[in-house]
Length: 226
Length: 218
Image (cartoon, rainbow over all chains, first blue to last red; front, side, top):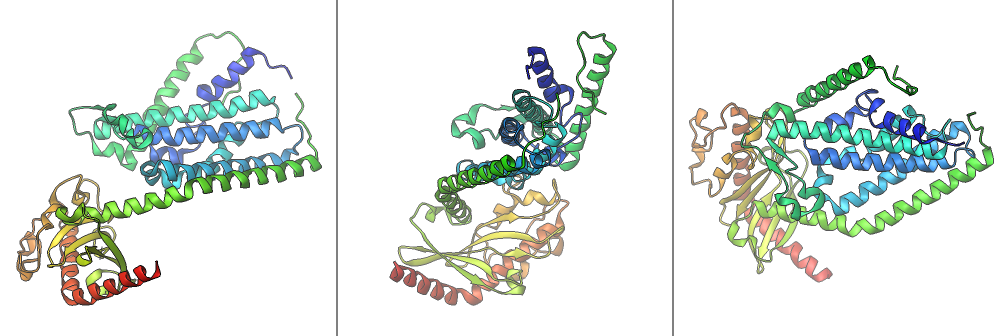
């Protein structure tokens, strides 16, 4: 099962951007829309999701020749459930302020990972490295959208960026934020703002895809979203 | 590449190992975080109680005793409401009520209301509410200073018949665009003061007895 460099690169690009879970497949929207009221919220949930997805994919992928195909998803869920419980407990202990906000969305990572992993077809026809990479790049792509949408909404809604970073990394980050001399539009951080922001990102993604498609490209395209 | 077919026995072994490993991990995470989570909760409770206490006693080493009080009309809930009595050097100095304003605009508003031993409001904070963003949510101290205007109020100041919002000929400003929210909060604060007036001695006596019990138990 030799994987060439280009294959791996294509797998990575597909998860991160081309077949992005949030922007192309529209998966995981519940936490995506709910928590992205600030960069830090998005970053924290994105990191947790990416870490859990990667670890889950890695374990299932390395066991793939031994596992019955029907057992892969249940075992994947078992692994992610255990990891997410740990993330939940540890973040509750160490990042109390952030945990207060992200609260119910942390356990939801399990459901999300199952959906994302199933969509990414974790560990079925690919070698373990490629399958782990699928999990990692899907997670990273999801993280990217969370952070971007969080930045957009925080900037428009509060006129700040990274204002709540101390919740994630402690008091020394107090000064590391950007504040515009404007109040911001409240609507951006309310639920409708999530949909407006997401719509903008989707439109941008589609625009870029269209431009991309009209350009002749070398090499074989990866799977296209249906 | 063909899809690997797998093997039932190996699948079962893997499932057992994953379950055991996961259980071990969760156990370790639980051991690691148990104490810290409890400490975080205590710190949050202390911080929120402190926010409605008189600033002059906040830094003192206060002991708080938690009681439960039930009064549907005055405390806003059918169920028992938490009341924290704070002791400074053995003397009860304040009571903090986790009262509810049942008639919020969208839902009941849960408040924390601090009352000094002399029946003066030392602080009011919303704990949870579903008031309209941009209007009713301006009762939050971070969004406007409206809720701070209760500090120092008592049933004599303003006189109890003037405990209403301006639109109802009372002495309290209402938040613009959120008269219902303002009315609900003013009424809840007044009712808490009424409850305190009727039950002050009983509350302080119960709390002192509880504190003595705790001291004996240790």
